[in-house]
Structure formats: C-alpha cells, structure tokens
Image 1: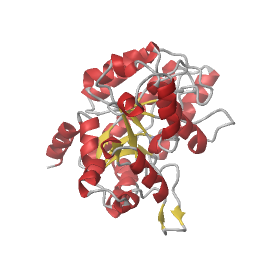
Image 2 (image 1 turned 60 degrees about the vertical axis):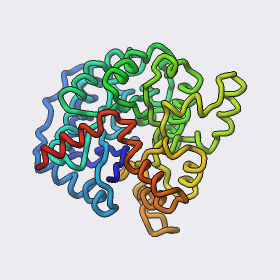
Image 3 (image 1 turned 60 degrees about the horizontal axis):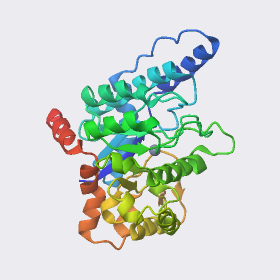
Length: 342
Ligand SMILES: [Zn+2]
C-alpha cells in the first residue's frame, strides 16, 4: 500500500472559499457572516475525481492523508470566532470527502488557531474531529500570525494543552504554517520552509520530548532546511549539551518527502534514517508544473523514492509502515473506512 501522508483539499468547490471571503468581509464590517453555501455530494465527487483521485490513479498511490488547504487556513484573518467557524467548515468538508471516498482519503484536521489566542481554543475541534469524523492527526500552525511570529515558541507550555490531546488520542501533528501576510515572505517559497525549520529548531531545544515521550511531529516539505543543515543542528545540540541530535529528536520527529527533485530526496534519505521518513507529495499544491529536465511533475515524488539506493524493505517503511506507526490510529481507520466501502 502506498500512503501519501500530506495532501490538502486544494480543489474544493469554489463556493467554499467564496464563503470564507464573505465571512471575513462581514467580520471586518461588523456584520454576522452569511449562511454557509450548499455544496452537493456530486460537486465534491467531481472535484476529487478530476483532482487528487485522478493523480492517485495515474501515479499509483493508494491513500492520501487529507486535510484542508493549508494556505487557506488563514489564521491571521479575523479572530477566534471566525477561525472556529472556518475550521469547522473546512474539517466538515474533509469528512465528506473521506465518507464519499473511504478507500482513498483519511482525514487530518486544521485547527481554529488565531495569533495570541490560547491553543486551548483548539481542543473542542480536536475532540470533534477525532471522535465524530475519525480523523487521525492535526496540522499545527507554529505561527498563526502569518509571518510575524507573535506566539510563544513550540517549546513553551502555552502549547501543552494541544500536546496533551495529541498524546491522549495518539495523533501526530504536522507542523504547518498557513499563508504569509508579511510581504517579506513568499507563502510556499520561504514561509513554509521557514516554518518547518523554525518548528524543528524550537522542538529540538525544548523539554517537549521529555514531558511527552510518546508525542510525534511530522516536519513537512522534507524538513525545510533541516536535513541539508543536519551538521549545523548536530553541532548546536552538542554545544547546548543536549546530547546527540539523533537521540534527542528521532523518537518524536519525522520528515515527509515533499521535496521536488531527486538530489534533494537523495540527501534526505542519506541523512535521515528510513524509519523517520514518510512518503508524501502534497500534490496539486505549491508546485504544479512539469519539470522540463525529467518530463514529469515536480510533485510526483514517488518517482524519486523509487530511484533511491535504499533496500526494498526501507522503501516499504517509507511508503507505508512508518505512516502506520506515526499515525497511531491509521490502521484502524483504514479497516473501518474499507469496511464502509464494501
Ligand atoms: Zn501542506
């Protein structure tokens, strides 16, 4: 089985994002938001059949761990109330996709975060998504301000209510920022990779793994700058007397394969043990074009992994086994959703 652990619903029916625009406009004008739009099952089917499902079939992957569009989370817009309503609408839509395509998609929640609003605000939505929707993870935004970094670092006890929930439910968090509203950053070019790198560095220098020995985080986009600068982080850990970096982080931190060229994947696989790498493509995401050097889509990452000089056993771990281990509820969710598909 080939499990892509990083996909977003970037092809959602247009009225979904249309409502978000109206919601924020209404909030700015001090009016209540309009009612949510009708989205039919057929519209959802069409958006998936011509989008992610089509690419799953073309590329030979089986299952996508699926969450709302990351740049669309927009935690810097509106306030705690708008974030709550928007997260709820987005997660409900993911649940509908997973219900319509139970063999192909399993849900991960976006959280109703807002800058400088306690992450305790997210707990009810996590409960709802795990218990009612059967979701198996969350996307945690380390910078809900959208590029101004106004919240405490992930090492701070500020975040601990979410960590407690993650451990309670055995769900991992992918550290994932949303759109940048700081013009210094390009959302997917620098803000995302920066968010990955910042998140890793904050966790590496923290007591989080001592306080939550079983907690699991996925650093997406191949770990941002981390694998490439592994020597720097090893040296920093050594200077700070934290111990060997591998001992400090590799029980709790995992990296996905959203790296859009073979040399990058080779480096990832050379530096990070196969046990800590999860297959992912984030397809129909940040980079949608075709690489003229290869003639294939940049985000067709399965091709790169197939070419890596790793054993067949290691590749099975990357494509399937690690995801089942890191997402503690995944195997049960696969069984449950497959039974529903019968
Ligand atoms: Zn993403």
